[in-house]
Structure formats: structure tokens, C-alpha cells
Image 1 (tube, one colour):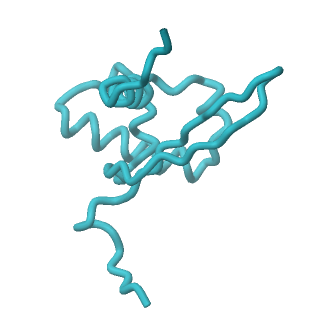
Image 2 (image 1 turned 90 degrees about the vertical axis):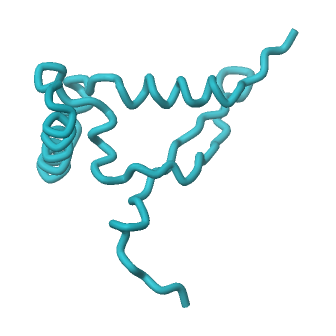
Length: 104
């Protein structure tokens, strides 16, 4: 019987992904400016949580101030004889911190 993906499955995957520690390879591939921006987010997170300094940078820190999940972009890729569907989560700033751009 085919298994369906539930909303809980999606939320659990998001939580696990964002809570994961950044690997040395991922960190090495970042630009200096990205590292500075992410380190500021890491520091803010640890200060706000009153701890967590010893746990290191996590993927949630990549988001910086972007805390609103606005969508998921899906892409199909060929994998051997079949296709794999991959999703990319898209985050944005909360309305109060987003720049006030008036639509045309």
C-alpha cells in the first residue's frame, strides 16, 4: 500500500532540517559575508535562548531574520530510470521587518 505524506511528516522534516548542525564542508563553501551574517544570527539565537553556544551553528541560522515559510518550490529530477521530486523551502521576513515596498 502506498504511503502518503502528511502535514506532520512535512513539519517534522522541516524541524529536523533546520535543527541540524552545519557541516564543515557547508561552512567552508560559504562566502565571508555569508559567514558573518550567519554568525550574527547564531549569536542572536543563543542570546535569546540563553544558551546553546556549545551546540554550534545550525541550519536555522542560515535564515537569519527570515522566519516566515512562504512556500515550497518543487523540481523533478531524473534519477536512474525514474524521477525524484525535490522541494526547496522558501522563507521571508516577518511583515513588520520586511521592507515596505508598494506594489505597482
